[in-house]
Each structure stands twice: as C-alpha cells, then as structure tokens.
Image 1 (cartoon, helix red, strand yellow):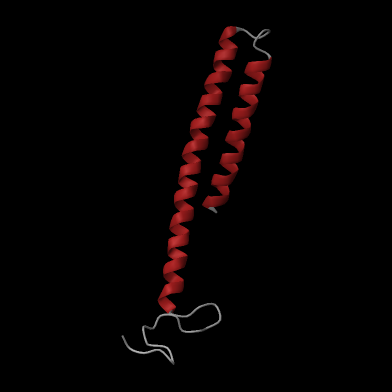
Image 2 (image 1 turned 135 degrees about the vertical axis):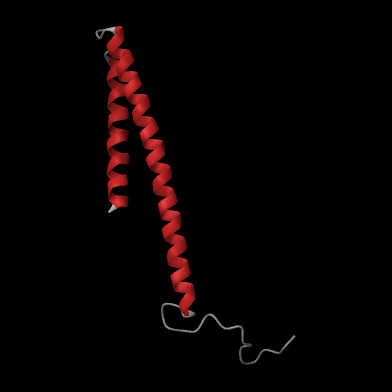
Length: 96
C-alpha cells in the first residue's frame, strides 16, 4: 500500500515539477517576475519531494528484497524443492 502511494507521489511531483519549469521558461516574458519566481520555487519543492520519495522507495525495495532473501534462505530449498542448504559432499567428490 505504501509503495503504491510513494509511486503515485513520485509521478505527481515529477509532473508538477516539469509543468512548473515549462511554464516558467516559456511564459517568463508575459508573467510577472513574482509569478516566475513562484513557479521556480514550486518546481524546486517538487524536485525535493521527488528525491525524498525516490530514496524512501529505494530503501523500501532493498528491505523487501533482503526480507525475501532471508525467507527463502531459511527453508534450505530452491523453488523446485531441492535441498540447497547442506554442506555435504556431493556424490563423486572427494573430501579435501
């Protein structure tokens, strides 16, 4: 649930940033300087939100991958049910 909210926030902030920067650049000759400054400030705020949400999302993905790896490693079997957690010598190998 949180990951979907973060992805939505990332998309929204990216859109707001792009639109604010585009309008500030294209319409700077007809807009008042205060309005251009306001649009640039909104674009910077959108960029900050975008970066923060991106970092949080990346950390969440890393934690989820680590959790999945630990959960699959505890069983000692792969996806086909073969034992992967033993340190026994395979048939035909010699003990060093």
